[in-house]
Image 1 (cartoon, rainbow, N blue to C red):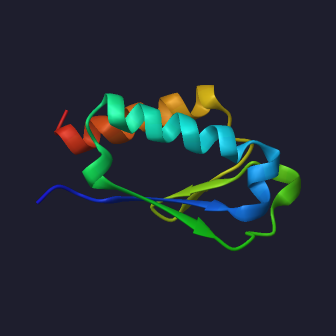
Image 2: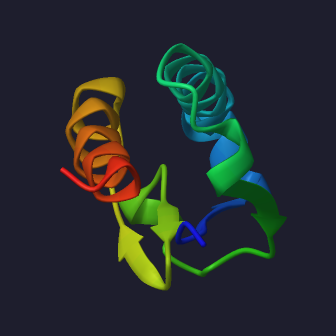
Image 3: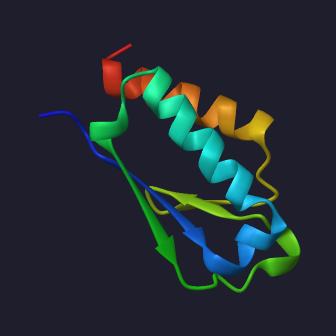
Length: 84
């Protein structure tokens, strides 16, 4: 059984850039055939708005997330999923 990855995004962070981050994540996962292994969910505010946009991946919070940072994070996650 492959590991599952849970990615959470707070609703107020969508105004701070997570709308574009979500689109980037979805496209990246499709391109790397990982959509079945990843759960994308919304979450309540994490009360770190000044540090946003914020994304939580498997319980670890990341602040000031942009697409460059996401590409690095997702590359590591995709590698774990494929056993690399």
